[in-house]
Length: 244
Image 1: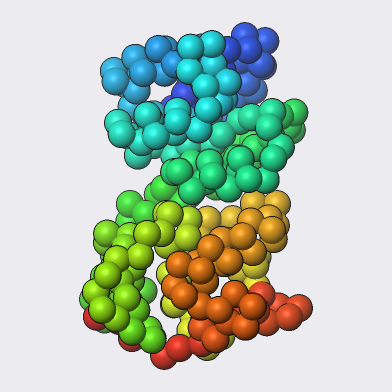
Image 2: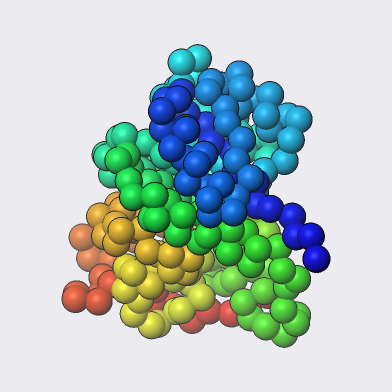
């Protein structure tokens, strides 16, 4: 049986790195295409489809996290940022803007390959048919303490119907907590539930997002009553939850 190869688009202006990546990934069984600039990237995603995109954020004619937005307006293909920047905030913002993973240069080729497999598994899981309608994991809306999470629109609404402005990352984190109301969840578990893998245990990233969510929900950040910190464990959403 002739199986279609997984196609990887590698976006980087470093020709030496592109050569090494091409050789390694082809050896792993992938079909690899390259783009060396923002223009190349635009042409490639306009004319071809890919299973995963490896994206450097520093291209000759286009730089920064805005590249993610450009890609997301055209395709839902999983994106792995491949960057020399190690700043945690950069990683958090990149993930919140729609990237699926972030790996820092220099990196081990085997680690990159593992991350590619992980995002492909996640993409395949997202494409699977939903479970039976009675499964609470597939309900469109979650309700707790007067709040409503619309899981199809990635929106949260307060008891008076006003919409809360959440980033995608913040919504996924609040959704994970709401699915486990009154149960303590570790930071690692939260990453498993929101990213499907452990992003180097970015404890600080979780803490920052929780603080933002509390502030937006009006939960006292010094003495929160809704999203509580469970010392030595993680966080817990203290409310009764139901699905609709």
